[in-house]
Image (cartoon, rainbow, N blue to C red):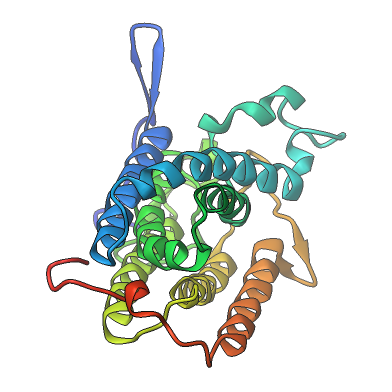
Length: 283
């Protein structure tokens, strides 16, 4: 198969500044977090919120989110670090720069961090959640490029011109192209972010409803994309499954249903004007 029309994988994902390793995976996450905070702060100010609120909330959210994302990964793919099939040492569960952050754990514990920060400031959680929803989607779109540098999150073989080249060391085969699942998710998240901004402008949601729309939208795309994946996890040619579906797909189903239930429960709540205040030049 000709690889003339394809997406090449990076030759390396780590550079060294003296003895300090600079990892593309970590850089993508840093850019994603920074952009998400910037956009969320801008949206919060446009809704009449106090300057600096998002930055204060973001600190515990990022810390808790990193812990939660790593915990989810380790729990789901514990065989990588423990047991007879382990390919890594147990202490490597701390090496988050090598990849392995589950979005579900990150959002769950990150949400706990936001809740704690809101409680300390005496603020309701709903308006904050709605303000940050598009920023999370855009941040995920950026962060997914870290998977490209790590040559992970790819799908089944394809003959499409945007097929992805994967090295043998990362589970690929010579002359074979694969669906760039990381790119599909990045584009889905990008489209979702713009959709959330448009929905937030057109509809007076509030009470965390825009965040629920984000959860429903993201899980809808993630279920499909996760079904495409064949990439090995951490060097092991397997993924945690149940009834022929990946655990991440079951999680997507549960969260999608939960988002719809929440939207139904709060369907009659009236949004206060201060919660839905928008300006023409604010995203």
